[in-house]
Length: 241
Length: 241
DNA sequence: CGACAACTTGACGGGCGTCAACCGGAGTGG
DNA sequence: CCACTCCGGTTGACGCCCGTCAAGTTGTCG
Image 1 (cartoon, chains in turn brown, red, orange, yellow):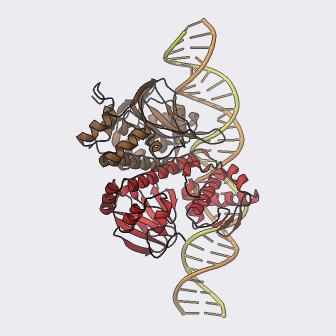
Image 2 (cartoon, chains in turn cyan, yellow, red, orange; image 1 turned 135 degrees about the horizontal axis):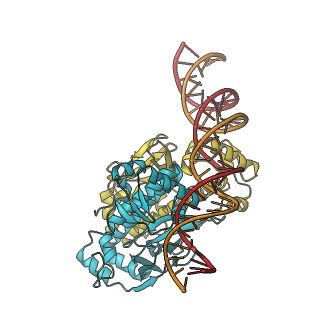
Image 3 (cartoon, each protein chain N blue to C red; image 1 turned 30 degrees about the vertical axis):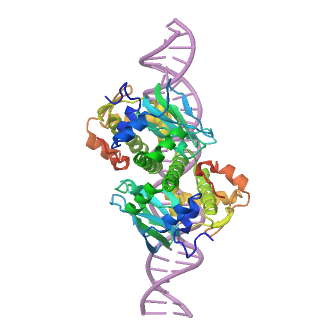
């Protein structure tokens, strides 16, 4: 229901809710190349000059940076509807990498065209700016998550965020979903090791907070899970339910 | 040199470099209240409805969030010229708190007036949006910092960032400066404890990376410090030197 | 059926947290 | 002018959470 053949930008328009009709039309008229890539493909690499913006319309991706000792830190997970590198509208050098987690389809739009469009349509600029602000809010929450929560709370929090955004993107219930990422992805997102992620997922299961079957997750008691995760969805600033 | 009596917005205009003349004039005509507060004063509290934006013109501040166990995580330090809660232009509920570190002076501008101005001046909107994107980039670096670096590298990195931004704000050399924050602030920013921050600062001193006298810091060998800190200033996207 | 990636589990060690004591300087009041 | 207090900083002893290393299991794809 989110994307339809008539409009490649459907998922993005759905996420940037409350766009004017004219604005949607203008967005849909943007030049773009649609690409489908396998899992683990790089869309952006840190240090690269970037002249395009990518709109993720199907699949999952993540943004990450690496420390000089090789340690990798994922800074966000991305779902269908997310704009992956909006920053390249105004910042020319990529300060982080973007990689797919699953096979994925995205629209590659020239930054210049999108930028020109935002100058004509202030409400589009506002919607995109708002999206940037929400991104920033999520990053702040992640700083808190990796900085001040123990492994159990940290992973529970990550799962709650995924559940809520998953639902917001129209992909299904927050209480029953399938994770697209490996435990190594989870480790890199939470600042832990894969081994400890594995142990902690087991602990969450033993505590009755989640039930697992492979990567399928069921959260039986959402209230209790939210509490255990120290999760308050305010920071996601979700307008759509 | 940065701020002058003619223009309360001087520090902010200096930071948002490359604004058109008309745009600067428009900014300067914004209605505002100038306030001076002591150290540890709250400008914004998490959960609050926010109808104003604050432009820091003197002193130091930080943004932070708290975990339910009481743990506090600072997500950024702010210097003169920084806009403290630009997000309140487009997001009505504060998702984090802002508190001064030293006594500070700021301009309180009604969000509505600033928002109206951005709709008239697309280059102002662009400059502010760009500022938001840079903020987001810094948050991502902080996620990496607290998630994947050990205490020594982490604190060294924080010091490097402070040094560079300190200079960019026209406050002096990056190799010789006085920290405005306590070791507890540093602990809350790096996800460590004050005790361990203290020990690690000593280690940095013993390694000859920094020299300390109270909160005065001298970085003798900036190259070596940068390397020890895994610090690459790219993520700050600084245009001005 | 072999190869490989992801997951799982155990044993052990270390970096950082916790607890506690003490120091030094600034502010305050007698 | 000196006690008193308080905050920030400093240092030591000890313990735990999580990292490291290593081995084994499961599932999938060719």
